[in-house]
Structures are given as structure tokens and as C-alpha cells.
Image (cartoon, rainbow, N blue to C red; front, side, top):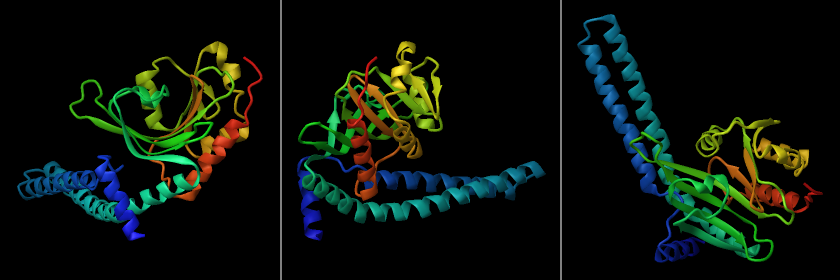
Amino acid sequence: MKSDVSAFLNEAKASRTRLPVQVTDVVTTAAVAFGGGLLFIVIGLVNRGFSDSVLQAVLGSALLIAGTLASLYAVAYGIPRIVSLARAQPRHLFVEKGFAIANGFDFFLSRSHAKPPFTGIPFRLGTDRVSFEVMRSNRLPFVEWGNYRYSLKPAGARNVTFVAWGYLRVPLTDNVPNALFCLSKVKQMRRLTRIELPRNPEPSGAFDLYCEPADRLVATAILDDETVELLRKNKFSFEFADGYFYVYFAGLFRFWKPETVNLLADIVTRVENTRVVGK
């Protein structure tokens, strides 16, 4: 097993693909948090040691506490995460590739996109677009699921923000209207819709519905209540766009876990069995 994983990683490096999460990414994040925490500790100690007022002493204590918490977080999060990435991520990816081969999927460790790869809402924004851990059925219908990441620089911001989504894409056999069902409680999706869809949505249960008013009745009747509840329970938003059904998760799918794959396969089966009577 260990030699197989090593061979898989060597193959990935030779193809110049990027691992989904780099150890250096976590090291940088932990180092920034730890360094910031130490800076707060120093400033807090100085304020407490040379305080001329109660307010300055309280401020120093607050900075000291904040710095200590930040440093502890960096250590408690950073070290286990680094060890996990170095040891577990290669095995997880190898398991995913094995599942793909056994179930008739093409597996892509990572793919860069110069242009938006799909028409779904998360794919239309940002730069440095990369999809990774992608499994695409090599027989009809061409179902695909994976993780997707892009960089976004908000207006007026200095730093670039990296945004990641788990996604599922299923081709539809029926002609359905374009509609986005945004789970109201997912702040990442709300932020995305504010950028891309400035108009006000209409409520549809736990979701905010973005579609043409004339299409609302059809859009809300495509999926049965049980499927919609399954999507809500798993914190998924979903969209019908240009003949495809998309599911979006604000985070990364863990495809090495059987329950993740079984859940997505269940959704695919439900969607494929859905038939739209008419518009």
C-alpha cells in the first residue's frame, strides 16, 4: 500500500498537478497566526507594565489574552493539520483514485481552467481557477463531482481571497428553466449571490430562489420535497443552469469517505428519476 501511494504521488508530480491542500499553505497560515499572537502578547505586556491608567492596563490584559489564544490556536491547529496532510492526504487521494477506477470514473487530481469551466454560479467568478479530486463518469450520462477553488479580490481589498466549493454536476434530459436555490443560512453562498445576482430573491422554504418570475412555479416543482429536504439537511445549495443540475457545498467534499460518495450518488439517482411534465 505504501509503495502504491508513493508511486501515485510520483505520477502526480510528474504530471505537474497540484495536491488539493499543500503543507506549505498550512505552515504559512499557522506561522502568521502564531507570529500575530506573539506580537499581541508583547504589546499587551508592554501596556500592562507601563500603564498609567486602568484603561491602559485593561487594554494590555485584553491584548495579552488575545495573543495567547491566537498562539495556542496556531499550535493546536497547525501541527496536527500539517501531520495529517503529510500522512493522510496521499492515502486519501489514492483511495479516491481506486474508487474511480472501480466504478467507471475518470479521475483528475487537479485541472487548471483559463476560462470558467461551467455556467454554474461559483464557476463564473475569480481567477486562478482549479478543480481537483474530480471524478467524471466515462459513460453516459456524464456525471461529475469534485472540488473547485478560485481566487477573488473584493473591491477595495488589498489581499486575494481563496474560495473553495464542493460540487456535483448532472446533465438533465428535460428542458428546465434556469434557477438558483441558495440555502439562506450559508453565508458563503449569500456573499456569492450578492456579487453575481444583485436582485432580491424570493423565499422558497429554507432557500432563497433566484429565477425569472414566470419560471418560479416550474422551478419549485422539479424536485420532490424529500430530495429538497435531503439537500437542505446537508447544507447544499443547488442550481438548474443551461441543461445541468448543480449541487454546491461551501467547503471541500471528502471523497475518501464512503458516506460522501453514497450521498452524492443518491442525489444523482433522484435527479435522473425526475421528470418535468412541462413549463
